[in-house]
Image 1 (tube, rainbow, N blue to C red):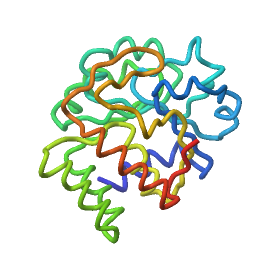
Image 2 (cartoon, rainbow, N blue to C red):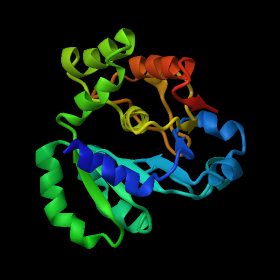
Image 3 (tube, rainbow, N blue to C red):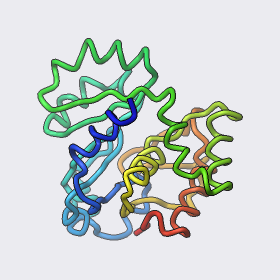
Image 4 (tube, rainbow, N blue to C red):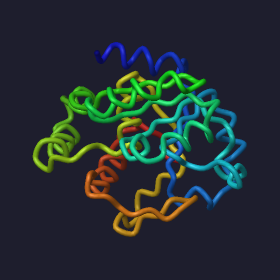
Length: 213
């Protein structure tokens, strides 16, 4: 199963030249658009908006990752708005199967459904030789019974492929209880531990596993 997921990602991410666009308001501090468009691969999340923000976030998208909320409530809108994009939905097994049967043939672009039940644990093995990262990931998944956010998950997937991503719009110092996206205000859900994820992303940057712009 995991090799199938890797092959799917590698179908669209063919080089190490990857930009990952996080949606914090920090990205509006500098006109990154041209720089982002210069990357061969650009990954975006959920319903992150490009229109009216191209100067800051660029216009190019190689792959879009979306979560259960999008799958439940915004799928038809995503289908129309991002019709030319390739989308990977990461969701629980029963949700993915139900939506896959109903919607996959309606999309003109390529869409994929990843079952997240064991995928998170598989990606955590990236850090089996780094006790801090490994144990923190297990804490999120097994002790707190939470899921990785779509942004953190994307970083883990790229590291698993041996890719060092260039990360835009990630505000390590952001107060996650007051989190705001650059294109909309959004409530912080209870499914993720964003505060701990930010600490882990900072550690990954310190270890030179990711490059934060």
